[in-house]
Amino acid sequence: MKTDGRKISIQEKAFIRRISVKRVLDGERPCNVTASYGLSPKSIFRWLKKAREEGIDSLAPKPKPGRRRKLTIKEEQEVKRWIVDRDPRQYNFDFGLWTREIISDLIWDRIGIKLSVNSVGRLLRRQGLTPQKPLRRAYERDPKAINKWLKRDYTCIRKRAKQRKAEIFWLDEASIRSDDPLQRTWGLKGKTPIVQTSGQRQSINAISALSNKGGFWYMVYTGRFNATKFVECLKNFMRYRRKRVFIIMDGHPVHKAKAIKEYIKELKGRLEIYLLPPYAPDLNPDELVWYQMRNIGTSKKPL
Image (tube, rainbow, N blue to C red; front, side, top):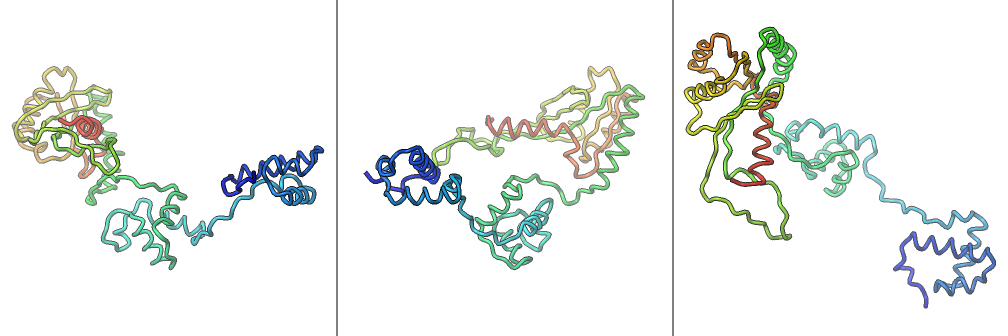
């Protein structure tokens, strides 16, 4: 029975060529070899000739040349530089997130070469870029002020804490809602899975503090977060503290209220409060507590 070459892989064809030539060179009759594989008798003589002239390795599969890239390696690297740590609005696009369509338009505007969205996707993968969910960051954020706080202010806080034998805590508050976005789950293609939750909008208000040494405190409270409520939380936090405490937190108006300053005076040096630079929540490690709750807690196990 004759072999259908269309159903044989490139590697299998190469194996048949080499083993057939080897069998003939070992003394087997060509007609018997071709018959055993269902091949044309002409094939074996063509392979034998090629093997004698160019060597047995010439019968190995040859890689097919791919489609020639429209951009040079240097141009692809330039595209990467346009994208990394920047967003489309810096190039006069209205959208703030990179899409393959926008990148294709940018390449056309700057290089004069039009790429399909699929070609752009392959280019991005070659340059080590992947689609990701970005983090939000306020444009009012001042990198110089943040760097100054880290190098000067925080260094002074740590030095003062050591001198006064105080423990540093990072404090933050948050509200966790029952309708917070859920993470992904598995389901049938084309049919969105349903997770049963309460139809009522429930929420939990909480405040927590995390120390540099791994200590953790939290408190759940009801009602609106205001100066009176914050003083109540601080009293709960300080109740069993033997050491002096330095609290670092953001500049929420409640944190700077008159009632807070008065309460600190009552403690006679047991508590000092320091504020983070504006729009820099990522400096506060206690933010990770709420990340854990929202992205690993309620997003996977709804309230």
